[in-house]
Amino acid sequence: MSMVKLVNVTKRFGKIVALRGINLSIGDGEYVCVLGPTGAGKTTLLRIIAGLLEPDEGEIYIGGKKVNGVPPERRSAVYMFQNFALFPHMNVWENVSFGPVIKEWDSEKIRNVTSEVLEMVRLGERRDAYPNELSGGMQQRVALARGIAAGARILLLDEPFGALDARLRVNLRTQLRSLIKDQGLTTIHVTHDQEEALMVADRVVILREGRIEQIGSPQEIYNNPQSIFAMSFVGGANFFDGVVYKSDSSGSTIEIRGGLSIRVLDTTKKIGERVVIAIRREDVSLGKSRRRGFNNLLGEVVDAMFVGGSIEYVVKLENDVSVSSRILLEGGDSRIFRRGEIVIVSFHPSECRVFQYPERGLLKEIEAI
Image (cartoon, rainbow, N blue to C red):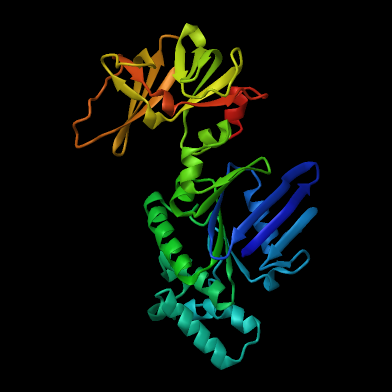
């Protein structure tokens, strides 16, 4: 059963169309991340589900019931802002019991529910503490407990880790997902952080300029991007503009700038068609000698950056096009290349994805991020 369903939802702000015909179904207990750049319409989508905004067109359903015009407090959803929006003058107990109190439940029910939920999020011993006395992780759990105590079955997260440092963000992601899954909550989590989305989501929705670009599991989104935008936004890639000049049953050969050629397995494009080849950085290897087979291009290392357990190289090819390669450091045994060193850039034809050349041009397609 779909806990949340949007049908042809459109929202405008004057001449700006923030959402364009959104169709989306989210299952009961599913954790969905809405991923996209600034201005894609992510927060607008979340606020429409919460009831803080009404769509200009389309319908919203929660638990199978149409909720257009239904106020936020009657939608069984809790909206968690970036700062968790706790009441600073209330202690943990008062914050968590706020919803039941407002709904005028009897005192025994309020006490039982509040106590149970605080134990659930492992904060029973901090019931008398105030928000400024709690860590970021504890504040997050208080906000979650407050929503559960109020009877929420849908959790709406708007960039919940945006204000936290990198190390804390990683820890809280896993803690929050674990708590949410334990409670069986349906969760819609808005973020512009691709790593965050891939780490916590059951499914990822890529939103771009108010439209859904792609929906799929984290693995599907990363391994099978359906557009140049999706491939560039999630994981990053190298892009080559070229023309198909040879094709047979085993693949195609595409000529790129400077007369260089790249072999791909794709056979769906016509000879003479202008295309874009995309190759993930981690699928590009560097060496000192040519390997057997296709796609061995000569180049010069112009930059090398240490990135945790890997090194990211930038290599300028003979045609002056730059290629990025991310090489995993394995026990310190990986070959280190220096700036100015001549190398062979290699990648397998199976790692090359081929897209139609975009109408707006390759640079504008990528810059749309």
